[in-house]
Image 1 (cartoon, rainbow, N blue to C red):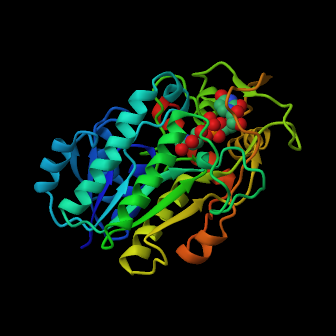
Image 2 (cartoon, protein in one colour):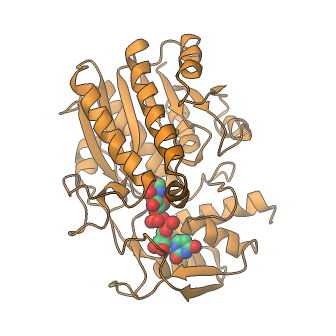
Length: 341
Ligand code: WQD
């Protein structure tokens, strides 16, 4: 059975990817420092798949911790590296925390690949590397623009570090997946997005408003150059996103890569405005959402959605979940977490 390390595996994307990996026959080993998640996620993954992943409470930014753990867990063939700080707004306030954590963490992972003969890496990157694209949809060749936040900058810097490292280590292979906006939850409602405090992202704010935890959703601006004036994003279902990681691992396992480091846009290829997403949520759930239009949010881009041709053709992967199903899964998860029948 192929053994794979998932760093940040108790997080939103990591936990869903672990479930998909186990269901496709991989032995999953998770490391996570639990700074933004809880060990209960391990139990819930086990409830879904019937297989308890090996878990180590490890801070990947601490090289000694990571290496001590890997010495006791040999035979890993691939790493999917999610573990990182990811709050855009926080990264502006405390940039050094983001540079130290996200960059040291990646460097330790790369050194571990050499030390423990782990040939394959999937890196969790982001569409934020494109900033506000001139041309839409964005392809993997669209220009990388100056990062709008230290968080986005750590993604750009880490892509360059991986590029430079694999260049002088021909036995290593890497794929960077540039996610668009991950949303939704597992259909079992046992795992999902669990933002700490007031959600910064749209969908958890929508579901918390629908659950009565938040009074009213603020829609940040309706004076953009879009059909209904609200910003457009490419919202990708979390299960579709998880499956893209498996397709990336298998591409490397089967030596199908055309370059040692490849980039893939992982989105649906469709852009939805904030109001369109709200309508999809209301249609899917039957819940009328309380929202108001307010001013723009600092740092928001106007519109972005992916050209996914390269991922479709080369990874043999395509997003399939209808947005209404994704919204219903998110709502069912919120009801589970909030104890709403
Ligand atoms: C989506 C849209 C907001 C909240 C961020 C990161 C990106 C990625 C995904 C990690 C925007 C609007 C939001 C609210 C609103 N994360 N909005 N009211 O900013 O597109 O992307 O998360 O990789 O890196 O930048 O996602 O969900 O915050 O916002 O109107 O209460 O919803 O203006 O147009 P974003 P988001």
